[in-house]
Length: 135
Image (cartoon, rainbow, N blue to C red; front, top):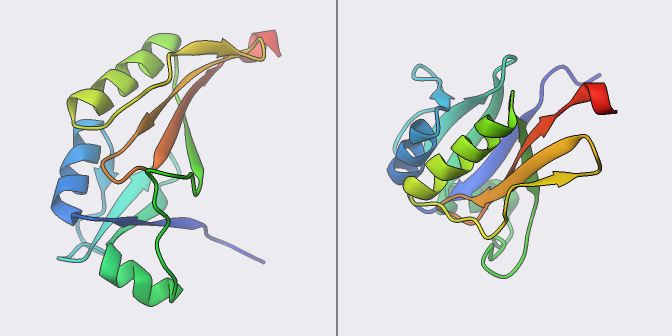
C-alpha cells in the first residue's frame, strides 16, 4: 500500500521558483532535495513533498515533453485557507511575487470560496476556504 505521496513539477529556474514560493509562505526542506536542479517544497501540516525540478532534469524522469502551461492545464493544485481573507491574501502575494491571476475570488457551490493563481511556470494553484458549517 502507498505510504507517501509527493508531487513533481517542472520549473524553468529553481532559484526564482524557490523565491516565489517563499514569498507566499511555503517552506523548503533545506537538508534533502535541494540543489542546482531541484528544490524540496513542503506543503501543509503533513509536509507533503512538492519537488521542483528544472526542466532538463524533469524530462529525464518522464522521458516525455513538458506541457506548455500557457496553452493548457496539466493539473490544478488545491491548497486550503483558514478564511476568505487568507484566500485573497495568498492570491495577492502570488501576484506581487510575479505570478498571475485572471480569476476573481468567488463563492463556489455554497460553502467554498476560492481563487486560482498561476505560478512563474504556469502551474495553477487553487486556494480554497471551505465553510463546513454550510455543507
